[in-house]
Length: 292
Image (cartoon, rainbow, N blue to C red; front, side, top):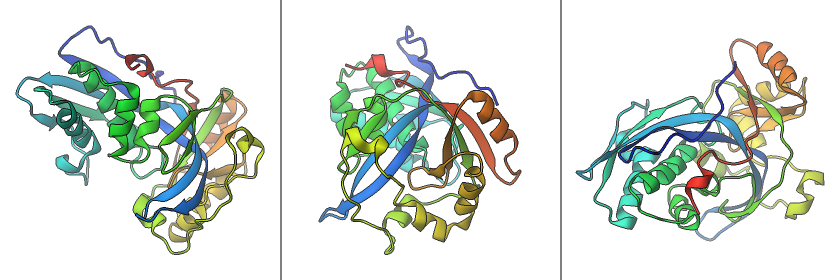
């Protein structure tokens, strides 16, 4: 299915921003290399941004209230990452402004493609502009880490090699590519996979320049597939067309393909019980220029 490219909205209006993009991501690989004393896992991964995602609308309020104007099944307003992001930025900067926020969802929840984290990052970037709070990219990345380990990469705004808990980022120069992403129709809770006793946590470290030539994998994939066999079935089907693996903690799986035409052919043949999309790589976040 053809979609318009994600682009930055016109920000001339001082009181609202509409159609702010929140792109998806893929983890080209994901290694769990250790665990900190506080329980957080140490990772190595390569993030790739996609020209496919949610969009958000923001309208400035002068009474300081933050309100979500769109429903999200199973997620109370106070727990929504976009609301938490807005309130975190408020508290950090002391701004008197609030916002009405509407999220237009395109990305599946629980898919491992960063939908909630990307929405939160876009909220930080857009409200930093709308409220004129003037925080830098690095400052917003630090705030984003308080919301989740994947939020900083969307503020970083480019393909990245990540270490630590996912917050230590180095820019990656990757060639353009087309991908097929398949959602097997299940949601995989990230916390469940990371807390699993059978998760491998001692994968050997690799160096960023070597990752493309190294033997990589997603350490979370075997755990997720044992608990959610439909994920394995989706991998097996997609692997008939191109090398396939799970992204993030799942449940979505992906494969890089040679062309848009091949992506169209594969998505058209997807079994009806699943959903498949084509997506191309995104060299930079559409809101990249809004930060320094």
